[in-house]
Length: 322
Image (cartoon, rainbow, N blue to C red):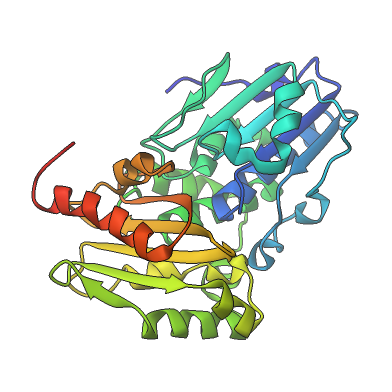
């Protein structure tokens, strides 16, 4: 794998911005904060700032989470922008203009559908998480407990606590290296992955209750409308974990979660087990991701969205390709 020297790239930069994808998850936040601590430790005199839409409540235990900003001054300029766990420029969301203005652009990602091109691009689709890639870029003498905590959390989240098939021998070796720094694995896994608020449990229960099976019971689908979110006083952050619970349903090949984050605007999460490549489905519908975990955004009617997804799934389940 090609290796980027982040410290060398940022050596002559006075100001460095770090960002990730919209609606950030554990791997996104963990990789951003991991790189943040590396650069702050190396260059305490430089301005280093992480830009993300938000940090989920369950992930705020990470060191440095309170320094993340969700807005920027339109006059601000950064010499270098490091994008992590992000498949395209558009998915940077509000921080995309900061990226565009930066002289030096760095992209580190593990999504097979990544569309970036540029001087400093490192894409490893075999890696379990962006955090795994970042860990490989950091020398032992630079790997602190703070960095290890951030990167370990990201790997835990993107591997489903090491149970997804993206977990490799190398993933476990990286995790062991991080644990050797003193990471409290029980706290990170319990507080950031398993622990749910009462509202999150209500949403999960509602989603499971109203889910349905289709395509000869090989696909499970659940839809969470904006009305449901409003009824429970929930937000998009409270959806975390629902798709994974749907995906452990016995006998299914794929799972689909559709939730309406704004009226008429939907976020779709796709998961599969063996036959279906959800990354190609997501890409065909304007998104991307991994073979067994992907997603996209859509507007309109959720009935039509389901029909579009199922048409593409049928082709794969019947052994056809486009």
